[in-house]
Image 1 (cartoon, rainbow, N blue to C red):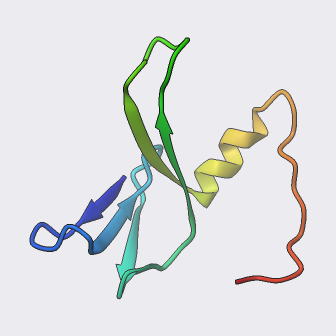
Image 2 (image 1 turned 45 degrees about the horizontal axis):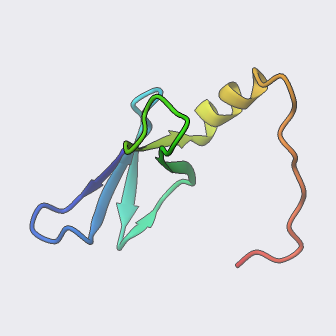
Image 3 (image 1 turned 180 degrees about the vertical axis):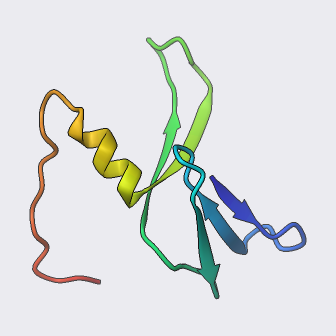
Length: 82
């Protein structure tokens, strides 16, 4: 869950993992740890047609989550990091 400044809605101040509740600090708009952020706009043929959902997961919770997948996540090493 992303938490923004109440006076400046564009300024990210903290990220909270939706799974475990871990708080990830943000310094000058930059998260101090990486997270997985997912936003989904549900469409036709779903039970959530017209609903937008979003959440954040810390790296530790992500690893636990994907370990339970029936098919492993495709993982490739990036040659260049931006």
